[in-house]
Image (cartoon, rainbow, N blue to C red; front, side, top):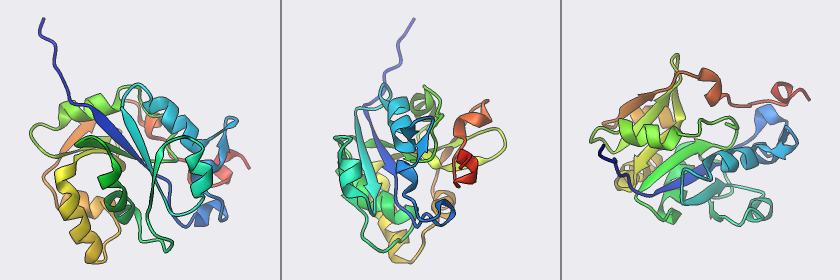
Length: 189
């Protein structure tokens, strides 16, 4: 049986934002099941990637305690696309898994499945069986110029950028694996 090899992966966790639905609290640091949301994401990625970069626009010291590289995406919120563009150069590897800090139940093979789905494209996006998950994707660093160009043009939405690129889709059967927590009510608070 032939073993399929794959490259090493970096992870870029998006932890910036205005947190309007979180009543101003930094979403990645809000507790869920007794741990900050970002701690769950990092735990799920430990065996899937070799390095992690957190893209944040505040709470730098709090994120630094994780011992991970942090990219400042600038104090004024420019959206998730700008966060990806700012942090991508800090990732060690050419293939980078991008995910939001509020997805604590990621599949244990999400990165590998995205890699297997790339099918000669520089971008693969997760699909939960009902919806595309634009903040759960694997991209090649060669897309940095395109990201920066979209940001310069004032675009913030990752979904629109994805649709402008050649990309593949990786289908997952467990839609709950991509649960994202957007409000204190969803945390039971």
